[in-house]
Image (cartoon, rainbow, N blue to C red; front, side, top):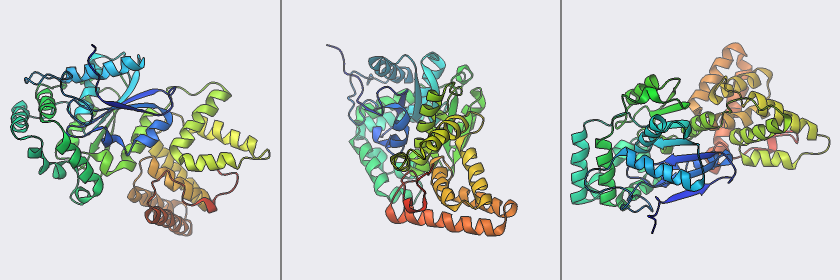
Length: 408
């Protein structure tokens, strides 16, 4: 009888490009829930649980005798990909999940199309510390780790939220043998000499307040991997994607949805443009715009989808954060407040924080005029207030009355 694979979950269109998401130590695939809706719009997303975590058993996925390795975890990912028929796939991983991604990209480069490494490292410190942790958890269970994790995973204020509490419960539910085996794998892990072998386009994300894998670890990876990009997320500890989902989701979208080459025909441009348009503006906005299309506006809708979204926004020359900054400035300069509200929400989706949007507006006050910036600040405040009042995310349309029937 064939051994079962790790527990996993599939989301997104079955024919979309594959993307595998790896979790962090002590969490389940739920750690990716803040990013899943946006990533699953344009990808077939597979999330998997580490051995002994979430729904995955320990045996026979990893040995419990101290000999577990990251290579063994990477083999599990390749098995999952093979079972889906994916010869090549994009990969994003958090912490130990990022270590698996680095290993795959260096040792199986033909399998990895794009890589994102979130709050991870090329070497997680002294191996003896990990072996001590493995021994502690084998003896006392994962409850021995509960007291220390909130201060490692989250900032002080965020650690008190229901989201943080749910992840701590994931840790409590983790099998002690599975957690300890993953500690064994981290003790034996060292990718520092292999980073330069990685050829896949790589994004490295760090939480600026992460005590487990501080930004210096991310910089080491980004400096060694040819052509890698680096994002440091302010106000985030080790689980940056949970604590600051807007910034991390935007960076992942920009990295994984960028096309390697511009589409060559109108049909391809329209398809690519619609995918990016939905990723940036959100399904609710685009669905409403499509529903309101009339014979009179149809050519305009096709034009903006193919040209604005299918050629300009899909280009590799600028990341989406930069494109959002440029777009906000242009809309402020011309006084297009309705479009500005839409693109403020888009900027949040693309990874800008509210504070960074404020900086763009201040910059615009100098070069576009104080009255224009004054109106822009009022528009931005209305958007933020609506989001806070209704509890919506940046890709949820909360200001439909301000848009015309030919909205973009």
